[in-house]
Image 1 (cartoon, one colour):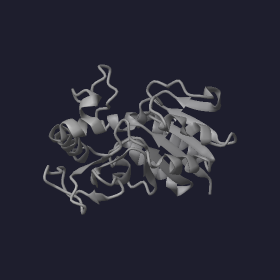
Image 2: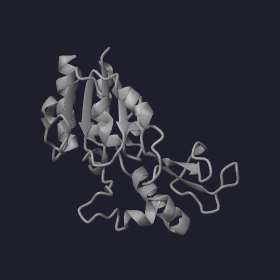
Image 3: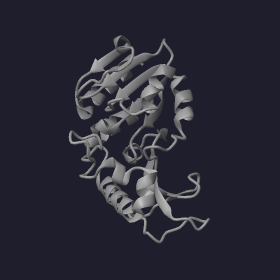
Image 4: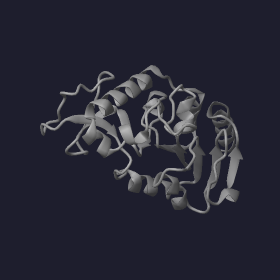
Length: 229
């Protein structure tokens, strides 16, 4: 069975109503990234950061997987599929994709502010300010902030190296190290990109491009891949 590796970004979740932090004004839900998405922000004002992510988590839980998320699940009928996502929502999982790697964490879990390997599932949308991990350290969102290491990047690179088909969906490829994952894909792999506005991608000539919103372009691509399997 051929292996498909899919890299998804904010563009696929935006159509479920989740705003991206790379809006035209450079703000995320009206906040400067430096105020809410860095270790320094957590040190300066943990209450602000916790509340910000509590509200984002509430929005995630209210959102629903869209036609693009659901279409990707169909590929599992004929391919071995791994989704590597830059998104911190759980929409791929709720659409029932079987293998999802979260590069930047997942907002529906908390983590120890002392040991990032200690993570915990959340039953609701809120992490209380007095919540602590088993070491007694405050719980924070299980999200990779700017300036922090991306612990899953080596795993993702190894997965990309096994791809027979590589697909990029809804990402501007502006954030590293995720933007460099395509460099690990074998030269023999078929490559596709789906985006409302096709980004500047390395080795662009190797990609078949579908310049459509994810909810339109992904089902188109899925139909094509299933027909050719």
